[in-house]
Image 1 (cartoon, rainbow, N blue to C red):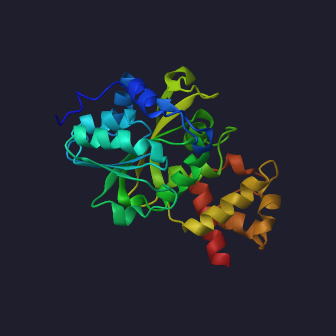
Image 2 (cartoon, rainbow, N blue to C red):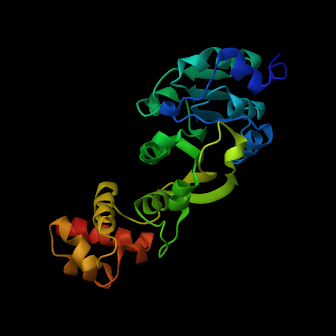
Image 3 (cartoon, rainbow, N blue to C red):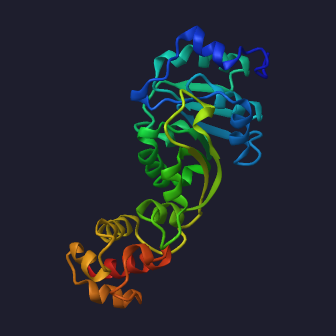
Length: 278
């Protein structure tokens, strides 16, 4: 048996191992096989590819990924209760699954992964954004990232300028990746149902950032601008410790504009002006 066909239904697994979802771990189990298959299809063909999954839980999405003939799947699971049922999944798929009982925020992906990998994950809500930021800074390790967030976070990732959701996460993600919203998932699809709708987003890391800028400087400029997003840039950028007007002039940006009005390219120009002024 190497195709998982003899594995018991997920609800039976949950009952057998007493896998009540733990709120402290941000757990909401996705048991709908149609949805797990749909998520696993988002990156495109996974045949002979390496995949990283975070928080597999009882293994619903894990089974779907392995069914697409991946070369190997590395799964990071913090909850020790899930280790035995996941070992059963590994056995059922010919050992193509390696499960590590680790904290995803602390693992070193570079030493774990033998080659460029795809990330596919139903992320725990409480660590979703820190994990995404971590992976953006290691983007050279990944071919794609298919990630499930609460809808509010997904909205921020794909947001356009002049919208309420547009902000620091939008700029960083769109500067370093091409981003696309895939589909929403109703709370009723999960066990237990969360209080919010979930959204699957696909990010494909760019070979080089969309526009020239230094990451740390860009983060600093964007943070200053959005920390007082209702103020004009000539006021909000004062926290950078230099006069904002020359920076804005250098970048070709009107000082009366506000942070949410600037494109990713304009923020990069502003970051470059600030870098030169230091």
